[in-house]
Picture 1 (tube, rainbow, N blue to C red):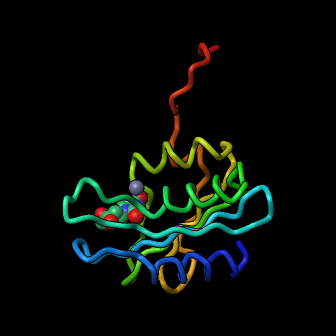
Picture 2 (picture 1 turned 180 degrees about the horizontal axis):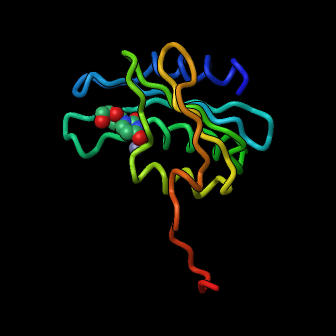
Length: 130
Ligand SMILES: O=c1ccn([C@H]2C[C@H](O)[C@@H](CO)O2)c(=O)[nH]1
Ligand SMILES: [Zn+2]
């Protein structure tokens, strides 16, 4: 993964609105249009109404004209990783392929690289299984 994606995710993390969990998360997508789209988690006093960093980035990608995730970085602070939650895995899968790479980062750099298939095996499909 090139450093620009990591830096974009780290910059996005600095914009997180996470006063309740105090767990800022940033995400950066390199999309099929060659652009980088970013997002951060945005929380709410009514806790379930907040949302994760990944859907912010996905929303920015779709509205910016990107349609496919080529690669994605997700970063958390304080030397913690943020493996995408279950809901985010489904949302990322919508715009990714089985080999799409997701880089799990801390503030130092990439700590773990996973494919979409590793993150969400045996995912929901409407086709009949062969
Ligand atoms: O995939 C995930 C999982 C959690 N969070 C955020 C949601 C919440 O604001 C904070 C603590 O759960 O981390 C993300 O941004 N992405
Ligand atoms: Zn999530």
